[in-house]
Amino acid sequence: MSDYVSRVSADLQQRYAGQPEYLQAVLTWLEMIAPALEDNPIYERVDLLTRMVEPDRMLTFTVPWMDDQGMAHTNHGYRVQFNSAIGPYKGGLRFHPSVNPSIVKFLGFEQTYKNALTGLPIGGAAGGADFDPRGKSSREIMRFCQSFMTALYRLIGADTDIPAGDIGVGSREIGYLYGQYKRLTGKAESSALTGKGLTYGGSVIRQEAAGFGTVYFLARMLEHQGETLEGKRLAVSGFGNMSWGVCRKSAELGGKVVTLSGPDGYVYDPDGVCTQEKFDFMLSMRAGGADKVEPYADRFGVEFFPGKRPWEVPVDIVIPCATQNELDVEDAVMIVANNVRYYVEAANMPATAEALRLLRLSPKILTAGSKASGSGGVVVSALEMVQNSLRYSWTRQEVDSRLKQIMGGIYDASAAAAEEYPLPVIVFDFGTATTVTVVDEQRRYRGGVILPGIKLGMQALFTGTAQLPDIRIEAPAHVICTETVESLQAGAVYGAAAMTDGLVERMESELGRPCTAVVTGGLGRFVVPHCRRRLVYDEHLLLRGLGMIWRRAQGEIHSCGAMGNAV
Image (cartoon, rainbow, N blue to C red; front, top):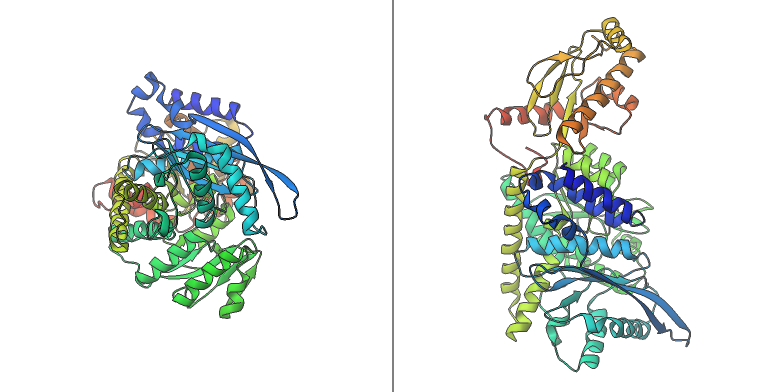
């Protein structure tokens, strides 16, 4: 990581220490784009990076409202206008008790780059309130929406900032918000909000657009690998609009979604969420406001797993559709262990930073980040704005065709970037008793490492005569380990662990950015528990991925996985 990126990262962490979601989103992004920044010194000369990771402005306001019993309540509302470099601010509104400045800023940051990937002239924004619509009457929700818009309307508009829906904000809430906007401004400015009903300026496919877009991205991803969705099993989280759209379009293309989830647990439907009856029931569950998925199990006679998440189910494809950080390291380990082949994000930042790093490093899995694969919703939002400007509505076929075309373009751009800028990773294969194979961050073979045996290894360790391998040259070097599994001793394991830690530190020092180690092979399982840092362990990595990486580096093969994480 360059000094400039390091300074920006350190300043953000000091300034916004109390905003974990925002920091997670920005720091993960900085780590990923660091190689590209190194090739463009203009970013530092004009300090573009600071303006790219911090919002233009953020509005905080109170939202007083009255319940049906005449009691007054006050919630907190937010709108972050993140960046308008390529067009007016555009982003969703979220009504949920968890909403706070950190959540809103993370959503605005993600939205900025998601919108940019569409190729459409829209900037990034986000907003919402810590209001919980669950259990509220329609009149209570209407009064809240009217109060929220009264505080916000001066700062939005078709050429300024265009809000849309998100969690807790559907077509009903958008209708209440737009009605209050018209009342306050006296204008039928239909492009001021998107996600509207069809009778007053909305677009067909808007409700299912986010899920449809993710599946179109996935289909293009599969096509790149010479495959189709036909016969594939998918694990999906959530049961809202995103999941509903994924289920519908997957079924249309021959796939089968076998899980849905909620805060109460998940359901496993081996026959798949593939019929109109099941699609309609998903809508009724969401409209009911109970936020529970168990009724699906009761209705269709399938298994319900209370308090669990769907990632333990063996499938071909995983698509998290619910909310941020719903998938942690333990879930990621389960996904790898189940030999999942594709991980495609639909929700915003659904995996923790460590879980995402593990998934992206596994050569068995192709991953797609939410900024790319989760952008279907904003694509159709922008198409709704176009239709409003034209005073004309396109047919369902026209909107669907445009959505598919744009999502295919986003995939192609993402795959090209992944090819140009690989991941920072170092792989250690402890698969034999005599060598350790080391592969660098660009997936190039760096040479074998000779294991001299217990006595020599331990003597070298404790006398300080052992040298860490010079990973900058393609030649063997010295480390400490053991000759056979039978002679494996605790001291040698500690020595191998120290060697591994030291190599990762050396690599990070040379690269100037964080680096993750993947440990493989039979001996690796003994080494990993004694390392100071958390390492990714995959016993079959050498057989299933490392050899292909090596051959690709030598120019023997040319295939490349999407999003820069596999071969």
